[in-house]
Image (cartoon, rainbow, N blue to C red; front, side, top):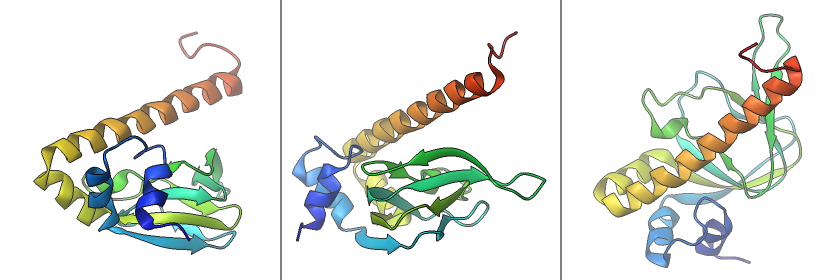
Length: 155
């Protein structure tokens, strides 16, 4: 069985960081599992966890006025789920629903923020990497919108 430090170090968010940095996250982490259909994130609810997906897929979705959710992205192994724990008011902006059985490392957001505040080198590295995830998701959303509408959004 893999150690928590190995599980965290394998995820793209932490890959390549020094072991001392990984150990800061280990102190806030635990293994979790979710069955298909489980709501991992609930829009508007308190955001308190960073998930490093190890297996399975999660649909990120928003509720439509019609009541049927709109899937905006599906993420899988080695992905990062949830960044709302980092920015006030610490509320989930989307729903996250397990499509398959999901295995993840859950890192307590309050604990991680406190360690980032106490260690500016760690905090900056974490912020840089999470910003990269945000940028990637934004670019993916842009491509999906262009596919959906079939032309430039400026037209």
